[in-house]
Amino acid sequence: MNYEEAKSKMSALGQEHIFKYYDTLSDTEKAALVKQVEETDFSVLARIDKGADENRGTFSPLAAMQRSEIEAREKELHDAGVKAIKEGKTAAMLLAGGMGTRLGSDDPKGMYNIGITKPVYIFERIITNLLDVVKETDTWIRLFIMTSEKNHDKTVAFLKEKNFFGYREDKVVFFKQDMAPACDFNGKLYMEGKDRISTSPNGNAGWYSSMVRAGLDKILTEEGIEWIDVFAVDNVLQRICDPCFVGATILADVSVGAKVVRKAAPDEKVGVICLEDGRPSIVEYYELSDEMMNAKDDKGEPAYNYGVILNYLFRVKELAAVTDDKMPLHVVKKKIPYIDENAVLVKPSEPNGFKFEQLVLDMIHQLSTCLPYEVIREKEFAPIKNPTGIDSVESARELLKQNGVEL
Ligand code: UTP
Image (cartoon, rainbow, N blue to C red; front, side):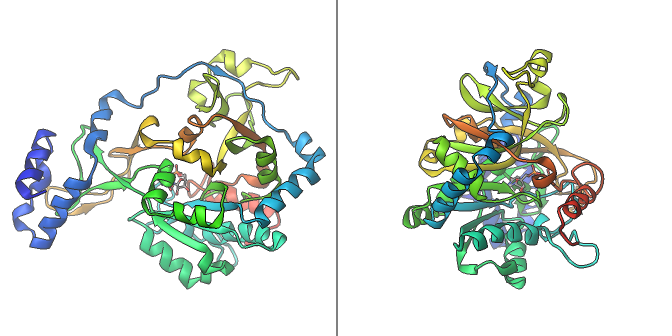
């Protein structure tokens, strides 16, 4: 694409303002901007007025494997999981491409130090948890780490500096997720530099397609990996590839296992696992009708009672059928850095526009079967989204201390 073509593409979209500084740019910068115009998918911008496509189907309950069953079958589940891990059939996928804007640090979220008397980094907690399984099974688990172009270099440099917190470097593979353009509330693209349109990571569902684009599915085939435990960077208590969860999912012979926690209250603000038109799905808390909130299962317990915690074990052979264009696009209000009319970079303190994301939870609905697997909230769910308050550094520290982790 040349400049004239790029200009007419953007004019047709009403976005020619992105070339405001074009004449002042160096040849390299000019070429970079034209290339970005060529490679970016701007079709997302048309979604602002329509919002997220929320034509939902008919919901029905999906029973979870509860703690009582897990404890009764512990040895059987554990043995099946250990066997699969020892055979190299499971990998771990750390989703670390997010911007962590709510936490408010410029560094990748995993670099955040949550220690009190000594440094304890979020990445360190995650890797230590995975190392527990490595030690228990005497098997190194392949660890994929998804970053984005915004945080990749810092993430890699930090983990190298820290010697991967004891993980074997040759077992770690990084890749970058794709980006989406970001715009103001009227749909006008922001610029993050004179030669660059503002972009942000395109959501955590991008992990599979970005991994394939990076050619890393080859590793899955070569190493005989059949299951991938996909998890968020910010839950510092979660167990990753833990044998009972792996064993339960394999023995249930489902497309995906999903760790879930029992809801604290019927109206708790968590996405609840269920069926939608007979396929596994997640219903958002604001989509739960009163009837669904009050529905009971055959034991008299709430029928929509298990919230997802972003820890899923996907069966690799079913992932090829999951495609991005079948997943809803979420239009989210976020704080987007931009250059103002004087070309000065502004980092807003309040949301100033839209980002476009596809979410990993929407992948579930493209699969045919799912096992919701109950974990104990106080032992496995300490997400860090904010500096203080709910789901924060403060609340996670309390939970870590309760679980005997020194901070
Ligand atoms: P969040 O939904 O909490 O988003 O991500 P975030 O970007 O980290 O934080 P905020 O909303 O800006 O404060 C949940 C998980 O998904 C990953 C995050 O890194 C985190 O592990 N994620 C999110 C990605 O890997 N890519 C994305 O595009 C978005």
